[in-house]
Length: 200
Image (cartoon, rainbow, N blue to C red; front, side, top):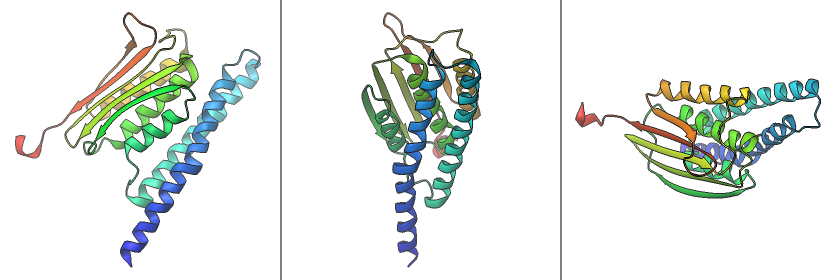
């Protein structure tokens, strides 16, 4: 009986993830595009960004509820594949996931979401790549695109980069975000290594 209940909880969590959560994420990307459209007046742009912020908070709350509902059965691999599928550009994924290091899941997910949001909103890219490897004691993540790169003049983008750095610091990870050398676009690299129990 208990196994049946847990299986149903997992099923519901996945349905929410694949349905409602992705619909909210897609609406967020549309708001990002609208807020940067040259035909939008300043007052409407401010209101659009306010709605976008509230929508992002709603999505975070929803994902937390999914986590509690099914003890986090949705892997970061699932998240990455789904987020990249909604970019509507050519994407390339190279993913090898065993298990995220303990205590890192939500911060890494938030960094991935912000990185993909930046590609959707700011990059004007036609291609994006993700290379991701995770074991119980290490994590290596690279997300890059062929867009216009990072600009010091886009305040909303800079706030997002600062937020990602703060999240990386919380889990003791090294985060590098820089324009690609010799080719257009931006590259994000997140690296984390923790001690195995036998090494302590």
